[in-house]
Length: 166
Image (tube, rainbow, N blue to C red):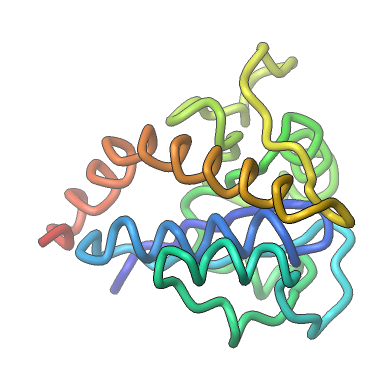
């Protein structure tokens, strides 16, 4: 059974679906499942046009993405929840942390589990491009791609626990 990594943002239409799609593209043999959720996401909205356009430029299709809010069912089996900002991680921990047994982190701090910390140290955050020009989405997507690369050792470690990385 593959291990689940969840990406988290606000509306689950820009940053977290892009992180999910890019992670699948960057780590196809990881033996991990990637999904995304939003702290204030309505159910069923497609990924934003800017996110779809950036992803398509890399050959990644976000066309089937539909936004999902954080729910206990959506968290089931999750080993990591990775927010785009410290506030995403903090809000998740305060609202859902007691029912989540996995690790909680921020994309800009690969492998740093914030679960037991009383504070969030300084780290790179991914700004929300929502409503911006394509250049904002391009900057966001490029940043997400770069930050995901830093998570490869963490993902390898997760997959090695079950021997899933090919």
